[in-house]
Structures are given as structure tokens and as C-alpha cells.
Image: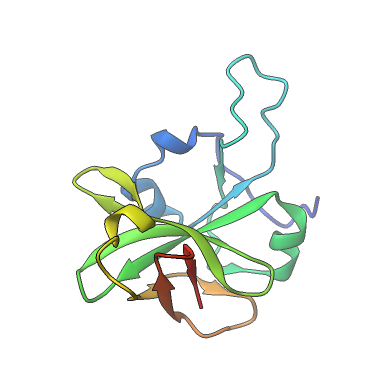
Length: 137
């Protein structure tokens, strides 16, 4: 693993809050808690001070999650960055809980979103989310 990243403490996925994501908009899963008794393979660590998801991050970690915003409804969310620059596994922060994007947008065909940190060498930050496929392009 590349040592250029300063990682924060391991946190279970269900315990990560919007405030956590606002403070550190990039989170990674590196399976580093495997030896711990309460290990859960969904646990993630914040990348402290990072402002951009790089190709190295995609290669170095099991998954990379970023803070996103749905400007039309003024809600934040989270999504995984896929190596081709698309997003998947979208979740929306709603009333203090993460809600699966497919459930939240079940009555919509599409939803516009913006990625908060830069991703992959300045790739466009505007995406359209398709709840049927749980992907954004």
C-alpha cells in the first residue's frame, strides 16, 4: 500500500455519519481490521486531509467512498468510486440515517448529483444517478 495517505481510525460503516463525511469526504476500506475481534469487512477509515481520489487509491484499497450532494433536493450522500470513474452503491443521508439510493429514489428514473472531492485527475464532478442500476455516470 502506498504510504502517501494518512488514514484515520477504523469505523464500522453503519457508524459513519454525515458529519464524519463532511469532515473527511474520502473514506476507504483496506481490510486492516481483520485481526480484531469485532472485525466487520465493511469497516472504513477516513483519508485525512485528502481532497482528491486518485487512481492509486482505487488500486490500493478494496473500496473508496466519497461524499456526494444531490443539489435539487439539498441532500448529501455517499457513493463508491469505480476504477472507470463511475459511481455505485449510492446512499443518501436522510433524517439521521443512510438510506439506499435505490430505495430513496424508487419513484424516480434519474437524479443529478455532484461529487464533493475531486476524483481521478479532475474527472467531471457532475453525474446522473440511475436508481434501477444503482450507478451514476
